[in-house]
Length: 334
Image 1 (tube, rainbow, N blue to C red):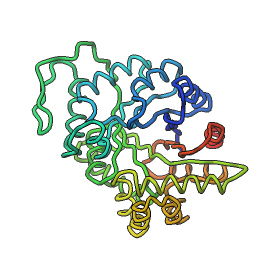
Image 2 (image 1 turned 90 degrees about the vertical axis):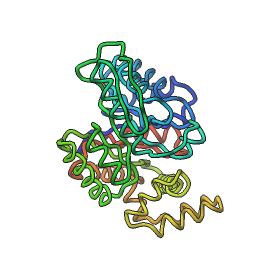
Image 3 (image 1 turned 180 degrees about the horizontal axis):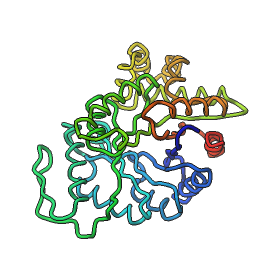
Image 4 (image 1 turned 45 degrees about the horizontal axis):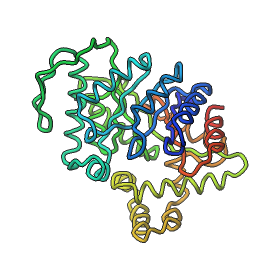
């Protein structure tokens, strides 16, 4: 294992918070460095990972990702500092612009100027971390006159930014403590790391100050690697063709425009089989880690060996059974 592994939990696959916490405890026992999960329209991740933090001892706890369209920046800072206290300093605040569908159809906010909103959110969280009276006059947020009503620790929670495009990644390099990329090929990730470095330079920082942890979808099966591959292929194709515009756009810009166009055309007909069939093996194997345990570990090691990568986030695949998830967790940590 070239770098530490984090686990991204499919919270929606669990019928109770007890089950989520059980998986987090297993991750801790297996040696995963951190545990996190994405937030969309199901359980909120703050409550969920408060439970996880209370029922674990040492594993790091993150949110992947909270949207600045759904919570005010000051509330995000309060949340991070309270989670820091609740987890004994194990928390990292994950932020990202999310998607137009979530912002507009769930949070009721216009998806305007997403990068500027994210930048100002990071600024305001840092201002709360600095203590004293908050005063911010930005393009999106204009607030001030009140102070955080608690002592601020010397080591407030780091801020991770989930980002895909060059300007967003530059923002992460300049202002954040971590970058969480997803659905990058090794070559695409290496190219985008140049944008991270440019951002760090603009902020008079080093990329050594930014924890880079790409999320890789994983499904390991000793008995049926073909099924593992096809399940992963279906999920990746869905992410590229149906799950908002940004994943598909990012992969298209990595040299796969024709593939993404074909997958999106199949989605227009809601033909998920055709979507999966349009995703070729070479791209699947460049974006995900699926097949035998040895193949999955080798792929994760390849991502972990990229210069500038500090950890790998193990994402699970839609439709996996609890037994398949546990087998994959054990396989990647073997």
